Image (cartoon, rainbow, N blue to C red; front, side, top):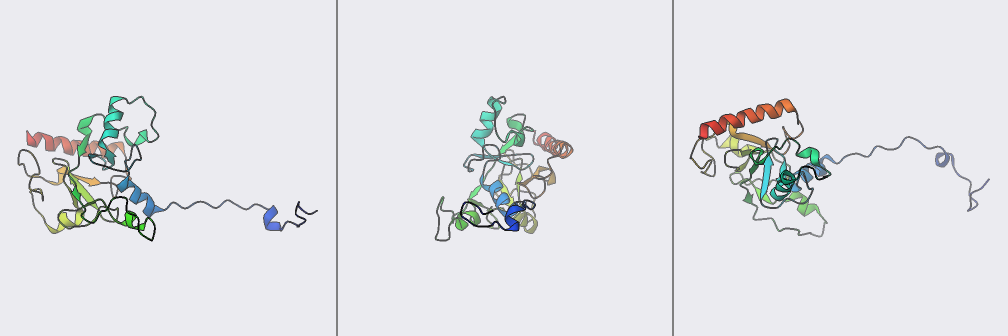
Length: 205
């Protein structure tokens, strides 16, 4: 009646209960979306682009996809809405002076997770998934939502909103990476966003 080791199995060892559902670490998931390309899953590196839905990509990964859309890719659903280069914008990012690359401290990876590569040029907030950010479709400049609320202006905070010096309005803003549009990838929403961008492009002509 015993097992190989001469022990008698207990009831909880014989009766299998329901499997535990693994919990998704929402914080880690959000951080990953701010540090890794949505298509290649490689770490983000300049030049970095974003689509109308606010997703972040390495530019070279997007160009490779556009050149050969038939190639198999693990996260191709993240770019199916991108028809060409007009559907992406290269981001004008501000480097974080506190960023030290792949540095690890005595506590493991916590430093890298909490420290963002880029910051808001106005408020100084780090782009690490903890704060809302938006970017201007016209020039690609990225700002924290807090800065845009506190310093209201029709001119880009970096003073070069467009090559033509045009002013911006609400239609030119894209919510960046996830606090609104990232989790609502709906065709209807994409249509609305593209309509706003079209209005902006016409105004710049």
